[in-house]
Image (tube, rainbow, N blue to C red):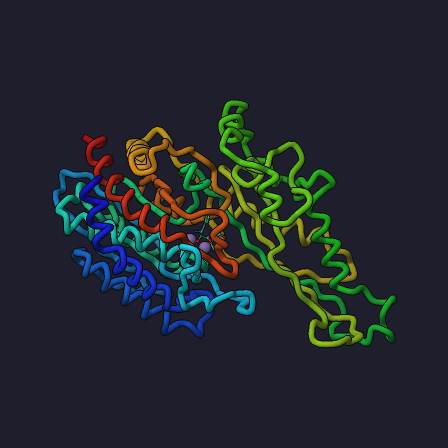
Amino acid sequence: MQEIKKYVEENKQRFLEELFELLRFPSVSADPKYKGDVLKTAAFVAEKLKEAGADKVEICETAGYPIIYGEKIIDTALPTVLIYGHYDVQPADPLELWHTPPFEPTVRDGKIYARGACDDKGQFYMHVKAFELMMKTNTLACNVKFMIEGEEEVGSSNLGIFVNANTERLKADVVLISDTSMISMENPSIETGLRGLAYMEVEVTGPNRDLHSGVYGGAVANPITILCKMIASLHDENNHITIPAFYDKVVELTEDEKAALNSAPFDLNDYKKDLDINAEWGEKGYSTLERTGTRPTLEVNGIWGGYIGEGAKTVLPSKANAKISMRLVPHQSSDEISAIFQKHFESIAPEFVKVKVTAHHGGEPVVTPTDSVAYRAAEKAILTSFGKKPIPTRGGGSIPIVALFEDVLGIKSVLLGFGLDSDALHSPNEKYDIYNYYKGIETLPLFHKYFAELSK
Ligand code: BES
Ligand code: MN
Ligand code: MN
């Protein structure tokens, strides 16, 4: 531990500067206009892995953005840790809400503000620096493989192909991922589950063209009104989702599991205050932690139609659209839920309109084990560096690749994230505490050490 702290202390400034360099690349995978920048980011990551001491570093081309691979095999008798992360980021919009530009990392109050600061550049780069540390101090305890992708934020659609084609190369004993949150630095925690995702887009068409709302209004259905009614009908008065068969495969937690989940430190008043809401909302019969960690949900992510420009225009629009996503829990399948959503949404369309439903990317839910050697190693690493045993929690977000690693490679993951829910992921003013960044770099070598020791 002393040696780790010493190395971090001596290299602190450089570790931060390198992360800043990484954050300056606008690697937005969703927007083709950033293609050149995303590719430059990939090259940067590959270069940094090489510098840190990785062998066989390769920028692996895919049909989309490349996957960076690198490894250090020190002894085939030792366990192997496969580190996964993503170098792509979400779009920075709405730009006007950022206090400082999203791709000019800025430190305020000990926090780095930039798109990707926490999700996931700040977090995966901790692994690159922890690896450098272990190489330089001759303390690498496990074999290491890196797989850093560039399409996580757009659904990792080419990653499955890559994983299937590289099962031998990716062989490992555990997948280690830092792309999730902790409760707080005082209450360190490890997420032991992620929700799945089914993402849909719907289009409701009324008349074959936009109409004068005075000439036709009142005699022709307005697709925006119809779409709003259809969307509103997807939840009942208890905020249960009304799609038939939606909950069929959902398993209720046992009373013990519920008690354990709800024993995590959580203050509903602080939560409401932080979000500036007077009351929380959700499915009747479940606590807030149960709602986000263990229950499936349906959210409208965006809705548009008609005139939204300056001033007023009297129009009865031809079309209305929405993007709707559902978070899934164990045993629900993304394809199945997409199909039943489509069927249901088409079935509730009144005769005045036509409905088109299409599916975007999805992902399967996972629960990761807490009785594995890898989990115990993570627990011990946190205990050593934070002085507190981590609390197992269930995360509400999705990392589709985790289920894929299990299915294709048969490897379980450990979600050793150092972010906070308040880090504004996908929002303006995303941040990552410098403290968390260094704390992560200090904790990760301990994971490798304990994983090797406990694997014996
Ligand atoms: N790192 C997040 C997921 C996450 C965040 C998990 C916080 C747990 C806690 C990841 O980059 C992400 O944003 N995933 C997307 C899904 C993806 C298919 C676009 C998500 O959860 O919306
Ligand atoms: Mn992420
Ligand atoms: Mn994300």
